[in-house]
Length: 156
Picture 1 (tube, rainbow, N blue to C red):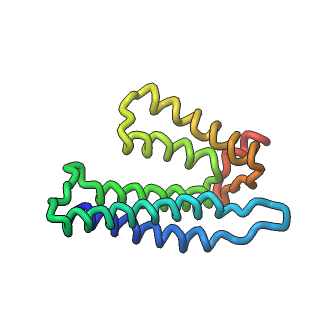
Picture 2: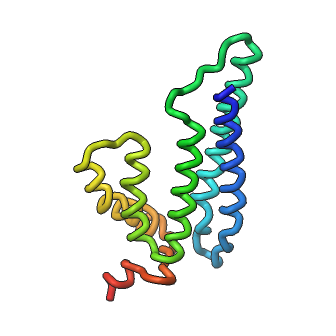
Picture 3: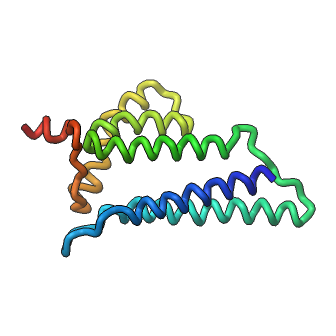
């Protein structure tokens, strides 16, 4: 039963994420829509959530016992969703660099990275890698912060 609950929890969160991605304004002609990555991630979470829930139901109806993870997977999904919401809002207030530098080691530690060196490097390497991928290679317009933006402060 726990697997079904975790799958349904992830499905509900994914539906909320899809709604959130739909709130991203349309791109100007010739530009890339800023909501394309959140929408893709939300759709992937929706598929995964449904897959987990249906798999749990199949195990229950087949007479097998649905295996539950001792780590409290549903709680981890909810915590990750809260971190994602805080990250999204902090992008609006503080631009791209600062929130990404803070969120990267937090999320990596949630996924099991325990190396202090790795977590410290993620503060610099994750914002740099994502900047190069999204803003340089893909040409996506970077979000600038309303309160403070480290990217604007660096550029001068």
